[in-house]
Every structure is written in C-alpha cells, then in structure tokens.
Figure (cartoon, rainbow, N blue to C red):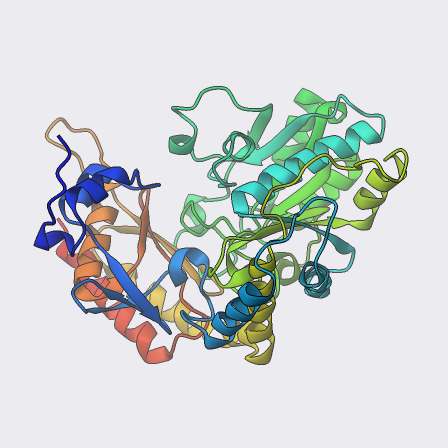
Length: 453
C-alpha cells in the first residue's frame, strides 16, 4: 500500500512522493532513507531543507559556472516566456535561434561555424554520431560506420553515447550498442600528482594507428574523445596527445569529434577545450554551461565542409537534408537563457578569470597530497579530480566507490557539495568563486579525507 503520510525527516515530502521518483544516477534506496533536499540557490551556494548554506563545489553538474540565480538570465527567461513560449522546431524558426547560433560560432575555433541545437549533452553526442555516419554515406563511403572512443570516456547515456563511452558501469547492463572500439585512457602511473597537463603519455595517441590497422580506415567514421575527461575523474590530455589524434585522423580521412559538454564555455580558461589545447575537431558537442545550467540545451557545431555535403546532396530544396531533430531543438526560452548566459561570460570575462585563479586552485588542490587514502590528484582550469584508494571488505573484495561516497556525504554534512564517482572525488568550482572559498573547501576536504576509515 502506498504511504501518503509526510515524514518530518523528509522535509515535507511524503513517502509516496519519494517512492514515485526513480532518480537518475542515484542510489535510490540509500537516498530515500535520508533525503538530501536542496531548496534554493544563490551565487555559489545552495540552501538545503534545513536552511544550511552549502558551497557548490561542482557548479551544479559542471553547469553553473557563473553562479546560481543570475538575474540577467531570470529576466531573459521571463521576457521570452511572455513573448514566445514555444515555436515549432521543424520548418519554422524564431529570431533568437539564429542569433544564438551565430554567437556560438564566434566563440568557436576557426572552421566550426554551423550549429545544430539539441536538448542535452547526450542528445548532442547522439546527433554528432549520426551526422558523422550520414556524412560518409553522402560522400559515397557507406562502409564508414565504426566509431572509436576511449577507455574512461563519458559521452552521455544514449545508446550511441554508452557505446563510444568507456565507463563500464554505464554500459554493462544494457547490452549491445553500436559499432565501437576504444583507445586506452591516458591515466599513467608515472603521471600521478602531476599538476596540469602531464608531459608523459602523448605516445598513447599512436594506439589509434593500431586500431586503424585492425579495422581499416574504410570502416571508421569518427574518433570521439573529451579534450579533458571529466566524469571519469578529471583526466587532462598529455602534451601532444590531441594534436597527434588530429594528425592521424587527417591522414586516414576519419572525422574527429570533441565532446566538450563539460569543457566548453570557460571551464578550461578559454571558450573551448579545443582553443585551450590548440586542436580543432570536425564536430564539437556542447551543453551544460551553454545556459549556465538553467534550462536543458545542447548543440553540435560542425565544420563548413560537413554542412555543405548535406546541402549539396539534399535533393530538391524542399527536401530534408538531415532527417533528424528534437521537439525542443532551439527552444525559444532556452535560446534566451543561453544568450544571457553567454553575455555574462563575456561581460565578466569569466574564462579569463578561470585562467587567473586556476593556479591558486591547482596549488590548493595538490596540497592535499599527504592526506590518507589519496593515490592521485589531477587538475586543469577549474576542474579537479582526486583518486581515493579502495579498501577491502571482510571477504577481501575491494569497494572502490565506498570511500568517495563517505567523503562526499561527510562534506555535505559540513556544508560542501562535491561529486563522488567510481573511485574519485571530483571538483568543478564556480568561475565566480573566491580564494577564501577555495581555502575553505580544501581545508574541509583534507580534514574529511583523513576522517574516513
């Protein structure tokens, strides 16, 4: 029988309401025993149901770099909702989608100048994969269907994304995906505790040549990687690695896709990871920071040649060149939020601010090296990852996720939100954070890590 009573410990939420929501990427059984409820947000802080201020150490989910509840975005959303709340995405347009597309191209590396809107990072990846396959079919090379991802890569949760992704827990229970093989990840033991980009490991890009030798370039549509792997625990690229991937893709006529859902629009200290690391892909996926996390939105940015191929082979002008899209592609309210978000990034020069405070964040983060249980620390821009050693159960089996979970829960109790995933603690500080806030976070984190068994 459903329990409709409200338990005071559930902060006004009835048990029936708790039961009804199947939460994503959550231990539902654990959460619903002691819910962690967020009531509001302002600036760099959440307020929980007990009225406590919680420092947002992950910018939402890598989404809210400009801080929460920005009045500029709120006003833009309200005005747009009162003017044009929704417009059909197919065969009709509205002014802000074109304005936003042009604004995005101005923030891209040269050559990335055609924008296709989606509703999320997962949708962006799925769209990029479809565009890549369709491009080769239109080029008369229909055998190019395989994708190459990377171990520890994360590319969202749709079937294409988990197929090219390399996080086994996201793939294991769902069965067969699309054709994909994987490069090795770039986390090397010799790079432990390296600050910023590691100098060793660029040679791992040569593994792409080996995969091409096995499968042949005539079967491979694209390589997809994150410039900096985020959800795996912040893995910066080794020096020269991305450049070599670009060279190999050029050599074998394979498209290169950068998944910049986490890295685009400021987090690396530049408009994109591509710009920061000096390598331009053929397709780029973005989301998260595009609207400052306020409304779901994503996009794929393509090179002119890819767009032109679709246009030139599209048949009569009234025909669909790309039979793909979403009901909420270029949603008017999302476009308004994104334009306001990008205005804030520009007016407050937040990418440059990230670059300015990143060295302080780096030193503070690596000062935790001597804490118990830490086996590695990695960082770039305002992204940081800490690997936590696993401990054995009574049966001697390691539990790599238990200590990070315990650390994150203790941090929440102390007033800090950080992410735990696999064997890592992950940080993605707001671009607007202050140096004292960094100090406070690191002091609490160091103390907490030493407290766990």
